[in-house]
Each structure stands twice: as structure tokens, then as C-alpha cells.
Image (cartoon, rainbow, N blue to C red; front, side, top):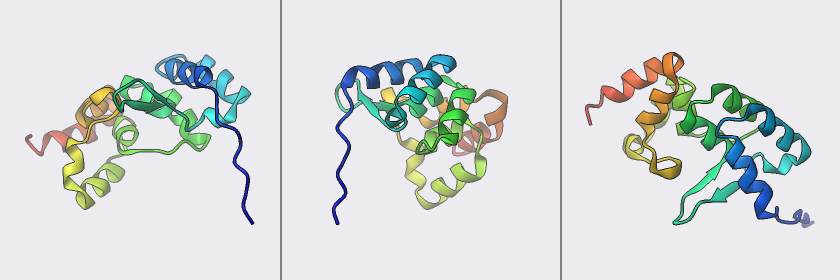
Length: 134
């Protein structure tokens, strides 16, 4: 039995959601409550630079927004884990895929910058990434 897909989201709500997830927690919650399908929707900034709400919050260091989105079921990634200070998650991924430490997040932002944006909560991740010396 084939399940029908819901219709595609219009682009404007996706752009707005990703935009506000860079720092406006209340508006992020309001938009997501109104349209739950925005949770993992990605905006194409051009040139293959796709970004979703969690990625937006992660590279800006907005822990509260990131945790809220993850709590709603957002797909966590290496960059969000780094910003949130999830050292064991970061270590396990980089143990399995060492070159992932050179991967770039949304807007070409390096993994180490995400850890820096996490502040004190991500200090152990930052120190771990710095230990590679590259």
C-alpha cells in the first residue's frame, strides 16, 4: 500500500522559519506550532547552501532554540551536537569518520565554529576539536 505524500510546503514559510530560527525563539515556536511540517524543512540560500531551523540555531549558538527543535523531533546533526556540547556524539562520529571534522555546515561554517558558538556548554567539544591541530 502506497502512502500519499502531503503537498510540498510553499517556499515563503520555509524561508521565514529558517530565518527566525537564527535567533527568535518565540517566533520559531509560533511558526512551528502553526505548521509542524517546517521542523525539518530546508531553505536553499543558493549554490547548494541548504539550511534548516536546527542548523540555523546551531551556527548562531542558540541553544534554547536548538533544544526545542530537537525536542520536537528535528534531525540532529554533527554541527548541532558540537554547539550543544555533546562530546560523546561528536567523538563517536569523528571516530567512525575522522575526515568529518573538516565538513562544513550551513553557509560553509566549520565544525569548530559551531563548538565555539556553544560557549561554556561546548568547551569540551571545542578542546577536543582543537586537539587535532588542524
